[in-house]
Length: 134
Image 1 (tube, rainbow, N blue to C red):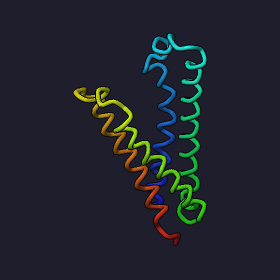
Image 2 (image 1 turned 90 degrees about the vertical axis):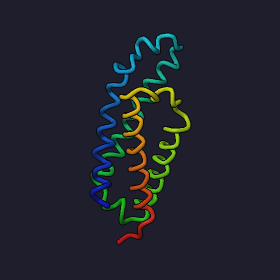
Image 3 (image 1 turned 90 degrees about the horizontal axis):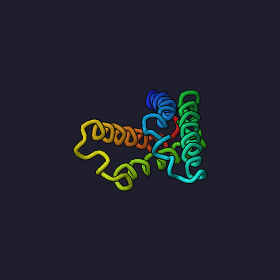
Image 4 (image 1 turned 30 degrees about the vertical axis):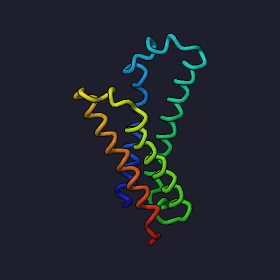
């Protein structure tokens, strides 16, 4: 299981870095220009802290994979992370509109890949939580 936790660490750090491209890719200068200043700044701040949280969680997985598996606290943290990614998977299907990806090859591919990624994260973290420490 350690290799999976470390792989998730690398994936989470990669996701954190990808967030830096969001403003340009999603054309936030134009798209958010009609929002009030507080809403516009909240988008930037929330995106930064999501990326920062992904980065820190990735570092946690890379540097403390053994502790996550073998300590009571680590397994409880894995429960929380499993819950987080499980809920994120539900949002993928029940919050985002299918019109964002249905009938669009690239968007559908991204939807499927990220759905599988959220599932992988959830399954690994819940598996660590449910496994007795060695």
